Image 1 (tube, one colour):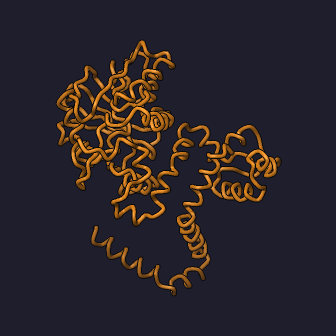
Image 2 (cartoon, rainbow, N blue to C red):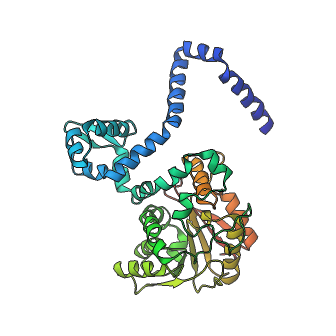
Amino acid sequence: MGALYDRVARLRDRLVMAPAFHRIVTSLPFGKTIAASQAEATFDVVAGFVYAQTLAALVSLGVLERLAGGPRSTENLAAELDLTPRAVEVMMRAAHAKGLVDRRTGGWGLGMKGAAILGQGGIAEMVAHHHHFYADLADPVALMRGGKPTELAAYWTYTGQSDVPASDDGAATGPESAMPAADAAPYSRLMAASQAFVADAVLHNRPFRRARHLVDLGGGAGAFGIAALKCHKNLTLTVADRPDVVPLAEAALTDAGLDHRADAQAIDFFEDGLAFRADLVSLVRVLHDHDDAAVAVLLGALAHGSPDAALVVIEPMADLARPTGMDAYFPWYFMAMGQGRLRTYDELCALLKAAGYTDIRPLKSKNPVLVRALVARCKPD
């Protein structure tokens, strides 16, 4: 089947590359529609950076929040933002083209996508930190060749240390306890802001309903764990992360009024024994931040130290058969970050099995494009 597809695909390639083919297709009634659609899709690839930067401008200037209060004219926005009307018009027309805003009688209002961004916690915060990523992507060939520090690696400052297992290409990955306390807050806030949609997508699953005590390993400022406590009233929680992150988690638990059901524990993923008195351990967007060698060490330590605890892995997963924007975005992101991989479900299963987990099952996600989940056990349920 694969060989047949290769031959058909090669024939298709030769046809599409031929100028005569385009002349024939565009002369047919149905062909004009197809050609126009393909041309628009191709231009969207070319203009993708402009779209991203338009969104970055909207977020940086707080335009979406302003429009949430009611429509604004170009002149009103120009005065509020200290920009010229022409500059505002350029930004808003680009935003309108992508559905971020729309035209109203009173000027500009929120579009469907703009309203969704305001309603979906964490998106604006993710956009705001992307200037690091885009700076690294300014020369994609240089990024692929490597050898130079990247802005994204400096932002995620637990990467690039030397006292944990070597990555697949020989580079060292960073210990979870190596970052100075002053650097923990910015990215911890970013991760906390984007945890709401992750929690909503997976907390309805049976392992969380049945659990009595959850250890959220690498839980940062505790946003996912707090959501789990609110969703499941009989659950207790330990947030386990680096020593510099623990005060952030403790403060968040206290602010949420949940410190009587939870605590925070300082831990080094790669140095400390991962023996927890829990029936459920969660790794929320942790494994994809590390290369395979480091993941193997982490999963092996969990399987050895906490064999009776079920393990829930929650993160975006690659789809090689039906790739989406995630499959384009994350591999570049991790390359700029200096470590990590977007893995398929099967690749995660292979790592889990090698670590000693024998019973692995997918969990249902309410938003599988953005986040998927699985549960693994060393012993049958």
